[in-house]
Length: 242
Image (cartoon, rainbow, N blue to C red; front, top):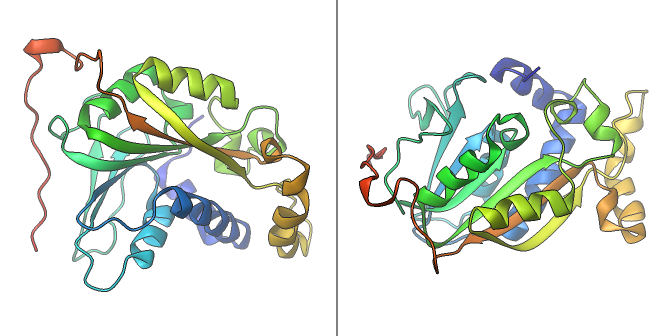
């Protein structure tokens, strides 16, 4: 069963969830350093990670951020009730024009998609030429993918080779990958205090040991035909006021 937006929010408000968000966000930030003027979109439940990316932007940054949340999950205001940049969407028909964004962060989304290839092809459509996509999924055969008390214990986990193949088939060329969450999601008292230490001690044994898988890819243009071909319809674009 797919966690709804309230369940996701509650998890990331816990001590374990807060540390989980920090560790993942730090890895994402290495894939997505600040880029002046870039349009960033988070698809799924990406709020903790978008907050981290925004905080890393230099003063006076012209980068823009928005959050798109699938209808099956639900939506919440972000970043505040007075300055909302989130919307409820159909992930297979995003309300964005072709080649309209620079960076797409897909979190807590692909593993729940009934048509993952279609979701990634829609991602390809909205990315600008050479645009970047970073996908976060549960890592197959790791303890986090079986821990139903966390968001990573739901949906279909992926191995690195499976995710690489799926993205490549949709003309998204993987160029970087990593895993995070080396320590199993223990709930006994004091376990969360060991999470950062575990990341440092276990990582040298192998990158594939992490419970969450991250893959960064670029939109490939050569030999590609946009979804729908010449008959593809123009879709409305979200705009932001200064």
